[in-house]
Length: 354
Ligand code: ACO
Image: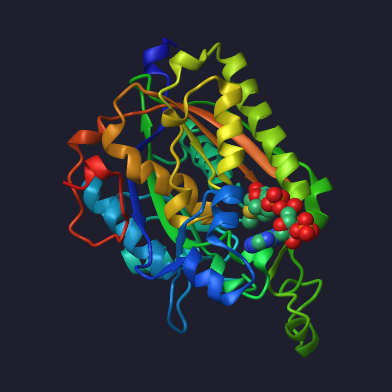
């Protein structure tokens, strides 16, 4: 089969939605013993978005993100075959939040499910979409990355509450035969990371009780230093592995699209790849770590700069441990995409705001 005719899975559109309410470093200074200076130098974060209001789960953000995506790409919801929702904070333990979005948006011909692999769920989900498309079992897949980290963050724990924010992003993945799309991916899991980053209670091992609530075991727990060490090593290693086996040199890469957990991890990865900071999509300043929304949210903000054929390396790292990297050729010219009519609350890059 000639290279040009190979069926590949390509991202053909991006949607996003973030809550309007901000939690700034100045706000956090009033809540815990911390400072803007400490947060900025250790993490790169200045502010995050928080989904406020009772009874609001990630679907509150994922539904408008998918509506934006379908509007921008001119896609009828009935054309979608599969909906995958990557999240660690689903609306409910079950049914899947994918079903909630599928129903609300009217993707009546689609089946759906959620994927949970900590912060790496979004990239893992893209590999699943790729497999369905390359096998010919789906033509149009919506992959959502959405998390309401404020729901599992202990705002009395200064070591974690400064890190996380709420957001949703979504991409349309379609079958393409023009040489663009996902070329290669390598995902990893290592359970050695379990003790360093987890939410203890709420699952079948420790169902909710008065004790689990009193002991704050429904909040995320993290030992930052070992997670940082593992992340900084493994994210660079997997990116270099993908570059090497696809014979990519640093000058061949248009952008690194990294999970936004810590500015220092992103900068170290870009440095190991030999690419300047400007070619790494970095928006952690504005949103913090939004877990599974970080990668689609970055793609949403940089979309207008992307051109058909651009080589992108997507890279992730998360609890568990989970990590991976993906190499894709971008499928369309981002500057030709219409602006959505729905208010997304996404800041966007300065040159895209006019
Ligand atoms: N303000 C001021 N001081 C603080 C704060 C704060 N918010 N938080 C911690 N400190 C203090 C600590 O108490 C410690 O003080 P000590 O030296 O007197 O004991 C000191 O600062 C250093 O603490 P560390 O935890 O060692 O700080 P570090 O430089 O490692 O930064 C951070 C912490 C930002 C959490 C970093 O470790 C990190 O980014 N880790 C990786 C996070 C990550 O990648 N997670 C994976 C994705 S998340 C997911 O999958 C859901």
